[in-house]
Image 1 (cartoon, rainbow, N blue to C red):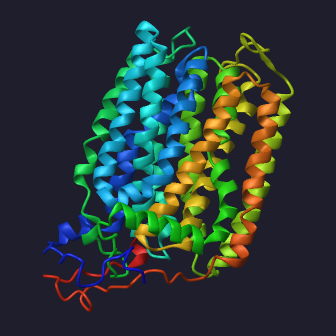
Image 2 (image 1 turned 45 degrees about the horizontal axis):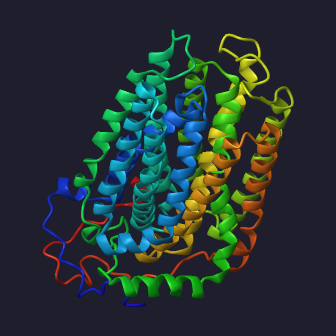
Length: 474
């Protein structure tokens, strides 16, 4: 194994003496929960605000322009974020990354008060830089802390807690806007979101050093040796040169956030009153938790080979995408874009046409959760090594953000709703189809890319032996 990517047994720091409670605190489940809590307060709250469409504004153009700046910067930083995190450490990256969300919420509050559009766009660009660090750190640690038998459930745990932020934030919006006749989110909502996002900036202080983490099967997590920038560039080049087949995952990465624009702006934001949009957003993020939980359990079923699970999941996802986007087409035929928004009056939750559209939005949330969890699970099935995962997750978030930037730019240019839907449907299905070569020729039932160091046998420097936690307890 390359010394660019991992510490040897001698280079790993000794495990600190931990009580039973401290061992529980340093377990993968608790640490992934803390990572989830950080994202609950930051991108989770960001999602709650975005879920009502247009950042909570009547005219979504300012929010769209900010999102274009956000995801464009995210895409650029994402390519280098894995190497940056390998260099500065995941905990520092989390702290820097989380701070950008509070600034962005503050910019929306400012816009609501004084209409300062430039501040929102600039804050969106800075958030793109911060989000690149946060999401790459999140993905690399979440996937590195799980064993091959528990990664699906750890991903599900993260997705449930993270989306609880979106659901709770949307519930706050529902409560604060229930009697509002305006179609714009009020200052009180932005203030609450700002406070929650600010709290998330301090949570990374609670994370355990990844170099002292022990997985549930008794093996140690092996983070990268604080490499030089030159070594990181070499490491990224080696990844690209040796894993050329992973280029077939890029369309999936590109498509994974592409659907948000039509869902949130051209469907939810265009069709419904403010309180109904808030309720829809609550349903969307709540059902993401359901979808993630079901997927996490099924994708880790031990009775089936990993390659078989991957292929069956891909077929189910293809069918699910066609059903959801086909249903979207059914409703999209009833309205079109005008200079003032949708061509039909806004729908309230008490109106007769609400139920079917709300059900569709629920299934959009479930579909999004399963698709993104599948992408994470595939990356975790290809690599176990934290350094390689950081680089691959960085590429994932970069390409994903490029897709999102393109989708928001399309909406900002006031593209016809039907054209947006057609592009979204095509991009999402193509992303899954291009995965087929990876499933056939790269994915294996077991991954051997990491030096295995078992606590109590190879870790002679350790002052104590961590007790092995039964994987079935996850």
